[in-house]
Each structure stands twice: as C-alpha cells, then as structure tokens.
Image (tube, rainbow, N blue to C red; front, side, top):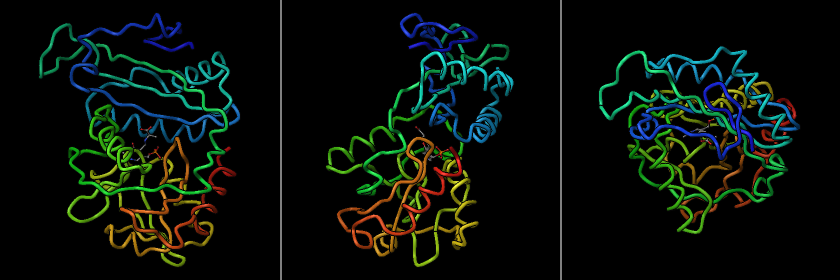
Length: 279
Ligand code: PDD
C-alpha cells in the first residue's frame, strides 16, 4: 500500500514519524475519515470543512490547501486501486524535538494519509439485521466536537461491547445518550426522528448533517433534543450514522429489543436515500 507522509507518496513500510511527534506522545492531533464508493470520495467537502474547524480549535495551521487535500486523496485512491473503502487523514502538531506539555510556534504539522480497502462497503449485511448495543457512561473529555486522535475510551468502549457479545456501545451522560463509540445516534417515534442537538458534547457528524437534510426533504419531522436510554428502548426504531457505516439500524439496547427487534421502516429508507444521493 502506498501512503502519504508530509508531501511524499511512499510504501507504508518506509513511512517514518518521530517518537517526539506530539501526536504520538500527547494525542495532539486531529483526523478525518472519508468513505470511497465506486472509486469516488463521499461528502469530501464536508470532511475538509470539519478538519479546518478541528485545526482552528487546537491552533494548528492547516498544512495543505483544499486542492492539495483533494489531490492527495485522489492520488491514494488511484494508486491503491480503491473501489470501496476509505481514506484516513491525520494532522498532528508535529515534532518539537523534545517532550513538553507547552507547545511552541513554528513546528511543522505532521500529515499522514492512508487508504483502507473495504470491498462491498455499502453492502454490509449488518445493515439488514441491525446492531445490538450496550449503554455505558460517557467519561470522555468535554470537547467531543473536535475530532482528535484521542480515541482510548472509544476503543475501550468497543472492547466492552465485544466482551458483552454485542456490536457497539452508546455513551450516556447525565442520564442522556450522547453518541456511539464512532457514530451519531437517533431514535424514531412515528414520523419523528429524534437526535441530540449539536454542542461540544458530540462530534458534529458529516453524515448526520446529510441524513437530516435528506430526512427533511423526505417529509420526516426532526426533533433535536436530548433522550434517555429508557426512551430509546421504548422507541419504534433507532439508528446510527457515520462516514464509514452510513446509516445503521439499531435493534437492541442493553438486552431490550427496540420496536420489533428488527430494522424498521425509517432507518433502511434513510440508508437507501443517503447512498443514492451521495454516490
Ligand atoms: N467516526 N461521533 C463520533 C464519536 C465519531 O467518531 C464519528 C465518526 C461520528 C460520525 O461522524 P461522521 O458522520 O462525520 O463520520 C460521530 C469515524 C467514522 C471514525 O472514527 O472512524
């Protein structure tokens, strides 16, 4: 596989980053994941806009122009012959040459891009059966709107889900669901789609924005408000959105079936609309 590192395309085995890079020592960096379907980038401009926002929030200067970001993505998709999969990008504050909590100015950010091949990405059979999730406390930091590479707790959450024999975990804070380990979450009641409003408490999902737009166009009612696990259990349907899994029905939470315990009417329809519109 060919990867991108600081302006150069090279084999993954030759890509080297300093042990003093603040991404490695301090998780001081941000990332984006863009899906590729049929060789085309999905909602790329949305991801670039959020990247800029994450960088601005951390005071890291954007090392590439939009055209350069696009060219690097396209080049990796082409050389690695990605039909379905994703492009991962990461920008860290770089290597100041030593370990220090305070960072200085004038250090060049480290830029890494690589692809992941996922044949049949849009035909995930789990979309037909739905996901089972557990709820766990949200003990992450207070700036979840910044897409940092600080992913230890989400990784632990995924392992807790695995150990519990289910697919994913939903985070709960002050009694309300925030989001999934790596997705935004929704419940459905009748014609109404309920999801947590944007704030510093959740990532502002690029897929969330697109799906809510399409849902409105399809005459669904959108209610952005907090909801509890109990409310989710009593809902007609539940689902998640993310750039890598699109729209996924959720059929069970903490062992309780949601609705019929099978994907309902709304989530599969939104998945179909999203995939139709975006590819
Ligand atoms: N995860 N919330 C969290 C905590 C996430 O990590 C993600 C994305 C989302 C959904 O955002 P978007 O629709 O822009 O992908 C919500 C990516 C896919 C990942 O970490 O792989």
